[in-house]
Amino acid sequence: MAASSPSHQAQSFRCTGTGELQVVLAGEGVLLDSDGNQTPIAAGGSVFSPPGPGGAHGFRNTGSEPLKILFVYPSAGGTLPELHWVDPDAVATLNRGQSTACR
Image 1 (cartoon, rainbow, N blue to C red):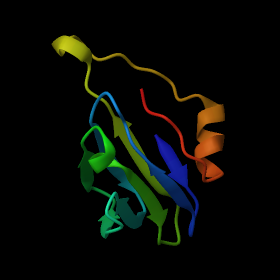
Image 2 (cartoon, rainbow, N blue to C red):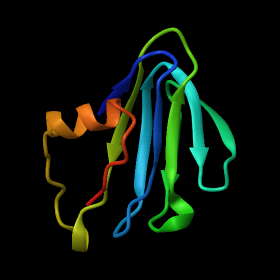
Image 3 (tube, helix red, strand yellow):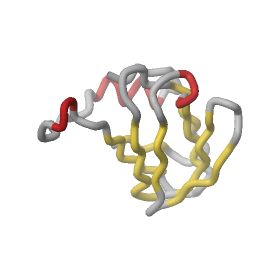
């Protein structure tokens, strides 16, 4: 899960090996897609970004509260999913607006 403060924009990034589901837990903002389009997002909504260049995406918080997004990745071969805690350094990098790599 990542949280961004009001007016913060996370740079566009993409996942090369797998798609990514983003579930908006709180706040409101816009999804920035690989073509430069902006799509409004809000709590209760979700977005799927496919792997590769066409799935590049970023987010901008347009609300007055933190934008909180849960990132969900499929498990390989239909096995039970694994739970991994987010590396605080990766979150700090994302919050500084730098690109991060997906697995």
